[in-house]
Length: 284
Ligand SMILES: *[C@@H]1O[C@H](CO)[C@@H](O)[C@H](O)[C@H]1NC(C)=O
Image 1: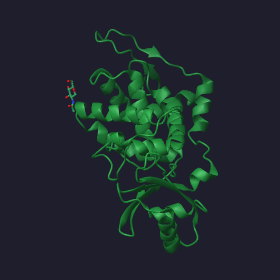
Image 2 (image 1 turned 120 degrees about the vertical axis):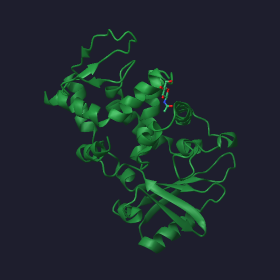
Image 3 (image 1 turned 60 degrees about the vertical axis):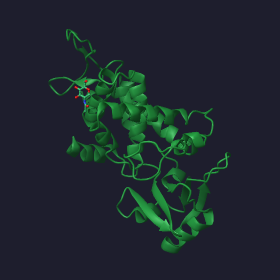
Image 4 (image 1 turned 180 degrees about the vertical axis):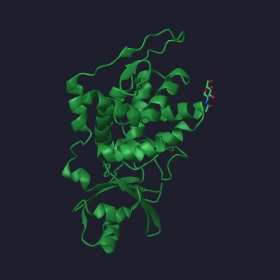
């Protein structure tokens, strides 16, 4: 029972996502696989600090959600192993109005290795468990057991009890605290304004002047197509620098030599399922 309870907790925690899944499949007409992929990518973005992204998206009208979902699917295309570097033609901002910093397909291409890893993790540990083939998994009337209610318009469908296999649930329990590489824990994403890139030296000097000898490395996007860099990553000597840089926020925005610099976490740092559940429960 405790194990089934773990899946029920997961379902309750992702109540909003399950509702969005059903809406996107039934009303907006996306396939369940497209919706699964879309929501997995949005969950990765929430993880790296775009808090409340899915709640905001849920509040939009159907057409806007469809457009945002199409963008998410295109972002995923940019992360495929054989993806080509996005060209200027794909330089338009994505998820406009949702994020307050510039984001485009190049962000996903540049950071594809990391984001894809997180995406697959969320797909396996969350999306594959809470979404069924035609509808999201539900919790039964008792609030204790997961059920699959196939989406059939006549509503004559009988609920099917789901008793997940033990091995799945054990995996879920451990994977909720994914092992992150020590490098990941010391890394932040960097974003510049379009057309106003910062150099490696400017970034190193900036962080050193504010926090001392904390920079291990800075990597800047190198466009083979001659575009100005817009993204980068900074690796600190220790992960304890990051809370100081963020100062309680989910991202930091700086003005460096009169150019904007956004820095955000690379791995969700407040992890831990219990903490997440509590935070989330308040909002649902
Ligand atoms: C989405 O479409 C459905 C079905 O047409 C409609 O009932 C619902 O009000 C729409 N939601 C929004 C927020 O536009």
